[in-house]
Length: 286
Image (cartoon, rainbow, N blue to C red; front, top):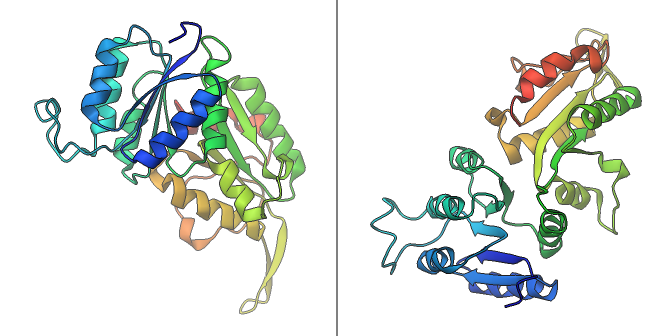
């Protein structure tokens, strides 16, 4: 092992996936400690003098383990979190990337309580993992930027003010505006799914872009564009409505979909800066 190489602990019980990502990361110049069983992970943690980054599957089987049953009650659904806690005690300054297909929002939230820990959906491809690993390890003491996806319609003034405000107020937040991102030959829905990966926060700009006629009242009203409503629903499904990670910003007299009546929206009619305190309070520690 060459001391100058960054050391990555990569854990997944799917052997094909483990071999694929180990090969890719080693080709990129990293030394990889790979493991598919929880006992092997504990051995790596115990024996290594240095590990610069851990990538942990959140769910691992515990069958056949010699050490885990004494540490964990259950079927292994929290195994990755337990291993992350063991890793954090040994290596307090090394980042942890959890990845999982779990829909358990409580478990996902608990992983983020560990310092310098992040969670990503398990369906991310090699390119995304390479990008995140490079971002962490290429610059000492750097953690990944938080990604804030901005769903928007035609109100470019509010969009740009929000993007500028995020850049100014939150130095580690990277605003993502889909229309400005490289497509790489993908369809629009593919592009949305690609750049939604790893999103920490979503801002939905509900602005009165479209005029509609309510036939029964013969009265016009203003609504957000259909793409805004679609993408808002997509992120509700992906991130969960109660996680506090989706912030709704409204402008002027805009009709809201009936399914979200009662949800808090922040009025940015007077501008993002005027509503900044409400936005900060809503996003809390994200």
